[in-house]
Image (cartoon, rainbow, N blue to C red; front, top):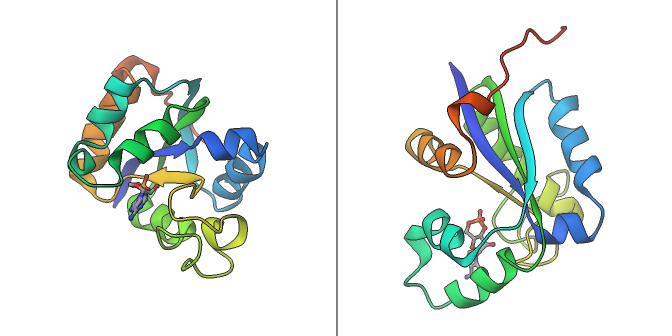
Amino acid sequence: SMQRTLVLLKPDAVQRRLIGELIARFEAKGLNIVAMKMLQVTPELAKQHYAEHVEKPFYPSLESFITSAPIVALAIDGLDVIQVVRDMLGATSGLKAAAGTIRGDFSSSRQMNLVHASDGPDAAQRELALYFDESEFCDYQPVL
Ligand code: CMP
């Protein structure tokens, strides 16, 4: 069914000048970008976004990474887009992600894994609201 997901191009993607290449993959797949912005994540936003990880031992390192440089946040629409995008990203660790996935092709790190995507419908709704106002989603008819 039609869904909307949140994708973050993380600080490593911006610093490595990969954002165009990554956005191109989502466009080539036929998904519809309906909102996009560059911003710097604050520690407060990081704690909200990664609420389920705040108590984990890797959280301090994750927070310093995700706040270290700007990110690009995207809202993407498509049929079953939540799972489709997660399949495009590959496994969490770039060391485990299959070749052909974004992380498999561009990352060799568990933390600096270039991209985040919501892992289910509830997460998507919660995470989209952290980065975008309802008024920022663009409704348009993509060609094709
Ligand atoms: P992401 O999909 O954004 O969701 C949680 C993030 O935490 C994950 O990508 C990684 O960047 C990071 N992460 C998950 N597990 C670990 C770990 N064991 N050590 C360090 N970072 C991790």
